[in-house]
Length: 136
Image 1 (cartoon, one colour):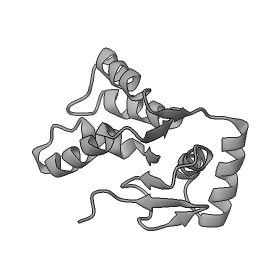
Image 2 (image 1 turned 90 degrees about the vertical axis):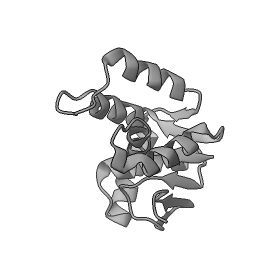
Image 3 (image 1 turned 180 degrees about the vertical axis):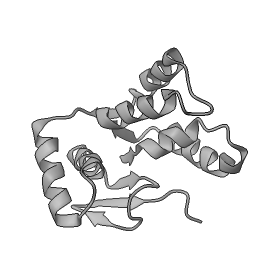
């Protein structure tokens, strides 16, 4: 399984022509059947995709519809174990708490790859490899 970070979801809906290559790469990841994400990622997507200052913001209904579609993937809930795992990862790898929680969720689901533009490409955290899918 591969874990999908919020940035991938947001690029998949981008209408910015300068981001078309990233949009295509994001959609290709979302077209695979072996995806995973977390409730945190879905929450972050909703907040960012519907924020009033976003130029191409989504309506509530459209954002919720996309999130509903993405629940076909394995979805990790926020649990006390994820919280404590995030604290441990933050202390050991100096990631932000939010990134650490995403890594903890990926680890809990047994994912070997975590696709994100926002973390350190190539970093290995407890068997989870951070991969920026947009690097050529």
